[in-house]
Length: 114
Image (cartoon, rainbow, N blue to C red; front, top):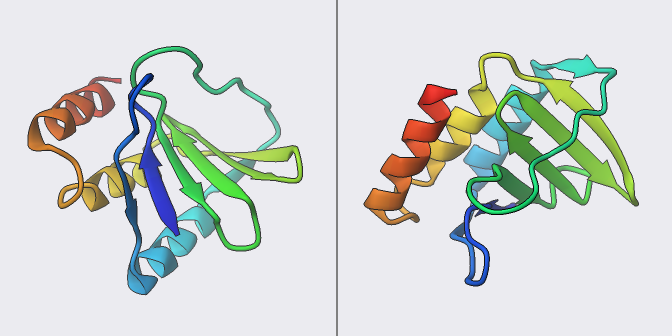
């Protein structure tokens, strides 16, 4: 699974591969979430827009932003609620070896403040 930190526009976003163990942990954490009947919009525009994981299990992608976790397949999306933002914080922890420390600190501040 490839993780992309959606933060830049006009230049490549930081990206990294999850190990098998990390991919299993992500699937386990996702399975703990409650399905959400809402279809809240994901962020657009500039700045921090969360994490994109592709592929995710049998799906094209998983998007994690704040308390929204969305899985997409063939143009259809389902959302889960993550009120503790556990997936977002966990993905941020996996970024340590792959994202420049200053940027990582900025994103961590945004995640912790919201």
